[in-house]
Length: 144
Image (cartoon, rainbow, N blue to C red; front, top):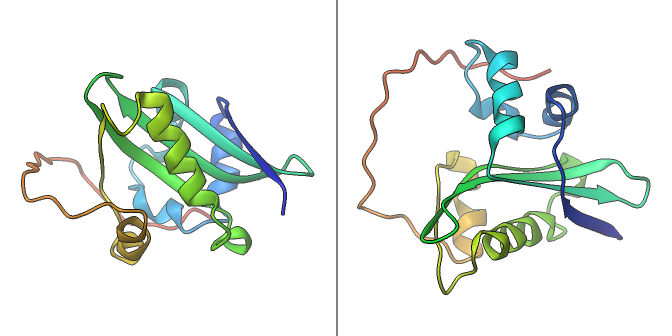
């Protein structure tokens, strides 16, 4: 299967449509969803998109980074029928490289319980040195 990964800014509409075909959409709260997605797609430090030979979006990976020490993966999703083909791993590898590479950059993410095996498989571990401050109203929903 052929696909290409490149830096690309999606519109909020494109990203929301992509989310409908992945399990990633369940990570967002319902509150101000469209407004916040608009901000996300415009302001993520790195925005990667994987497209198939028909130019369909099959994977997305966003990260925020200082390009010196750390990288936080905010979003990683692959269209359901393309899962298990190495696209997610390739997106993470490219994101890490663009942020400054594994010799310079510590990579973090917050994951859904179901995604833990994927992240462990690509070499990530659960840290015990992360603190959280969260006062965000959060109503679960599914992007459909």
